[in-house]
Length: 147
Image 1 (cartoon, rainbow, N blue to C red):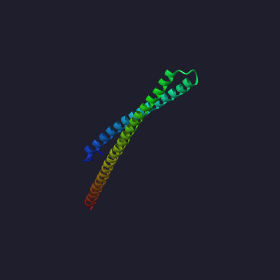
Image 2 (image 1 turned 90 degrees about the vertical axis):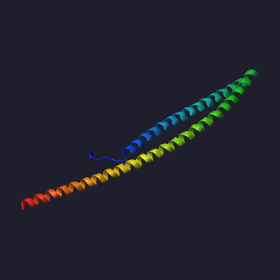
Image 3 (image 1 turned 60 degrees about the vertical axis):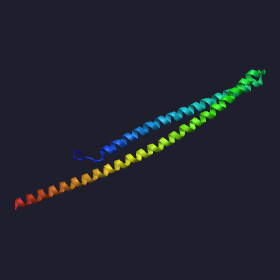
């Protein structure tokens, strides 16, 4: 509509921008969370490899240095896994917080869109009434001039 101007359009535009920023922040946090999970999976796989190696080392000729090295590696992996689990939990909390913020921004934007739609509907109703009034005046004028 050429004549329609929503008086709070700048607020709606800001709501769109804030929602876009929230989407970007959420996507980045989600990527970070997935990276942290991948790191955890890699550490778990490395630990499994060390455990397999320990079984192999203890089943053949006993090399005490190799056995001790492998046990130490498993212990180190356990510590790294615990740290990584904390990082995954931290990233998960950030993702949850940003998801909530994004939901809130989306609700705000939808609210402003509904207000705009309501204002547009009221504008159309007012325009229709003006057109009806102009038509009625034209018909009554035409009717009077014909008499």
